[in-house]
Length: 182
Image (cartoon, rainbow, N blue to C red; front, side):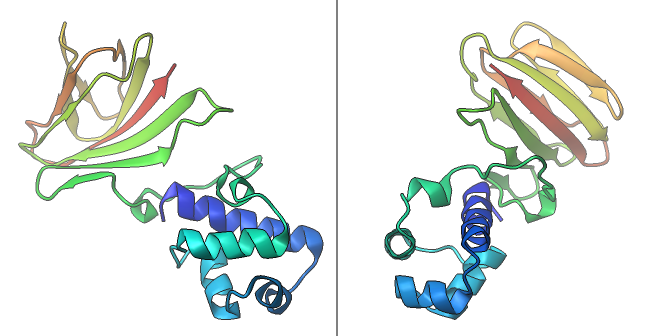
């Protein structure tokens, strides 16, 4: 489930719960079927903008209240459930686990690089630093000014203002968590 689908799911459940109204009542107010609302709350549906508009109008809320990052103290993300933003079979997969948002100055990605694979990343902007932790395997990072090999249970930090390259010359998939801090 991508982060926008998760946001909509959690926000709809939260709003409905806060108002103590049933799915039947929301369906009646919005003109969206109960089964569709149920699928949206479970994160199994990717509603169209038209459906979101009906929900917002029927609940008398702004559309932004459905798509914004839910106010939460904690959030569990299963990387296997996050839809890849880049997926080159046999080479690499990139998933956004926690996107950059106005109220947060950090972004977290999961990058898996297959043996012999390589991922080229562009600049993340002036002043951005990248922190990465290799969870499994070994990754080689070419920052543009240095090349650093990072093994499992090791961490590496660098300025990510320029194009940089992740590669895997090992025999197992390199699994990397990347944290971007502005």
